[in-house]
Each structure stands twice: as C-alpha cells, then as structure tokens.
Image 1 (cartoon, helix red, strand yellow):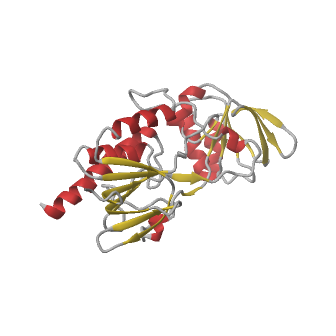
Image 2: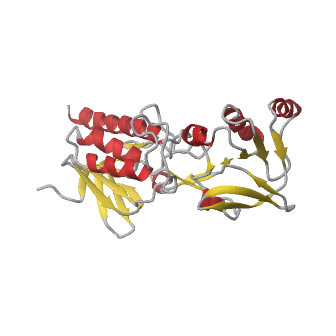
Image 3: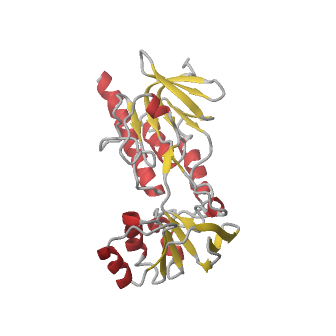
Length: 302
C-alpha cells in the first residue's frame, strides 16, 4: 500500500502551470501531489484571452476544468492548503503546510506564481485585473480605441506605450512624479501624440472594478476606459529561497531552458520564473517542467 505522505513529485501551486505539469507526470504514471491554496493571482480577472480554444472564458472555469481533467489520472492527488516550509531530506524533499501536514517527494515543482504589490491608491486593487491591467496581449484588444492611461515612468513606460500605441490613439502617461525621459524619448512620445502627466495619483474612481476616472493630487479628475500599470512583485512562496534557489535581478526564480532551478531536483514554472504572464505561457511551461521531471526520474533508474 502506498504511503499517502510520500510521492515521487510534489507540485506546489495548482493553477495553470501546476496542473499542466501534473498532467504530463500523471500520463507517465508518476505519483504526484498538488498542494494549492486556492488563491490564483488572476482571481479578479473576468475573462482570459490569447489562449486558443479558451479565448474569452473565465479563468476560474478554465482552472476548474483543468483540475477535473488532471485528477482523472489516478496517480495524481490534490491537497488544499498553503505550503509554508520545505527542507532537503536524505531521499529528496519535505514540504510542510500551514495545517502541519508533512509530505515527502523525490522532486519538487514550484508553480507558485508571484504576488503583485499594490500601490496605496484608493480603488487600485479593486480594479486590478479588470480595468487596471498589466498586459496588452491578455487584455488590450478588449480596450482597443479606448481612452487609455499608462501608470509607469522611464524605460518601462516607453515599453508599454509602444505596445499599446497600436491599440489606441488616445494614450496618456501618468508618471506620479517627475518624468524620467531624455530628450529623444520625449520627442518619440510627442511624435505619437502621447501626453505626460506628472501629478501624483490619489484615487481611481470605478464601478465594480471598471475605471471611470483617475483623480490627481491637484484635484483634477481624468476619464479613462483602461489603465495599464507596471507595479512591482514579490515571490508568492518563500520556500524556493529557503531551499537555496537563486533569483534573477528582477526577482524571478532562476531556471534553465528546461525549468530547472539552481537546486538539484527542484523545478519552477511560469509567473514565479518568467515575466511572460499569461495562461498560455503557464500551460506551456508547466508541460515542459513535468516532462523534464519525468526524464530525471527515468534517468535515475534506467
């Protein structure tokens, strides 16, 4: 009888990347445990886009269907809970949840995502993922030709403006402080009719998460249909760092081309290890991570 505390692979994080990795492993008859807290970063987002066969579906619906499909494989199990610590053992790794449950595995996959750090602007977090958005590829088409703001400064603002410029001819940069553009950059923005407002943002007025106006410190209220925001993030899980996984300068878990971290037997996939945040990319990275973990397990015995 199999020990229900010991597995070949533990996947921490059961959203798109984690479920995709679990399917690849389940189809290779690997004993897998998925541990998931049930709080994906896109839980406010009304619709998912740019993922063929699922374009326009609710993220929760995609995840629910994915979980049902993955758990059809008998060797894959699901544990609701938050993984809070991990350690190396003589045979692999040990993961402990906030409830005190302890599980062991030969290999680990972290599909834990990142936590966005919201600015202290009233209304911002209520709109995040709905009309205050991060990605033109995920959300831009739905706000095409609308009056659009970009909350960013410097090179990041130029990058987003270039992507969004193809979607709207009414763009405004909100730098919330002195704009950090050189003469050449300012000329480029002017050429494309993109205005710059340096006044601090104090509030986002909205209706059920849909932006109506952005209020500035000087009292002005500017109407927008959408606001792109470049905000910082932190790792959602501290366990990879506990285990010694290196991070990049941007704060992502460092992985090679096969989703392997700098710690033997530990893999990471998607938002926690890449700036390409989308459902499609998460599914692809998870599939690759699952296949590479299976290969390691094969190589160890064959």
